[in-house]
Image: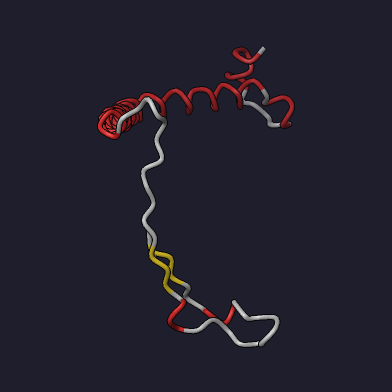
Length: 105
């Protein structure tokens, strides 16, 4: 793991008033894998690979479902909105033609 300080002026000593020296702006440390004692690194990599494949598959299924249902969903939503307008014509104060009034009542 490499930690690099981009702006050393943020780190100013309260005693001397000097900022962090350029030699100390990069810190390199080795961090061991932090796994539970009973799980090996290979098992964790295998589980992560399977989870990644499952998530990618679900993403593809969702995209295909969205593409295949788009036309019918637009028709369904437009039908719902039209029925809503017809039901609330009297609230909106819209004058209906005489041949349509018999269907609303």
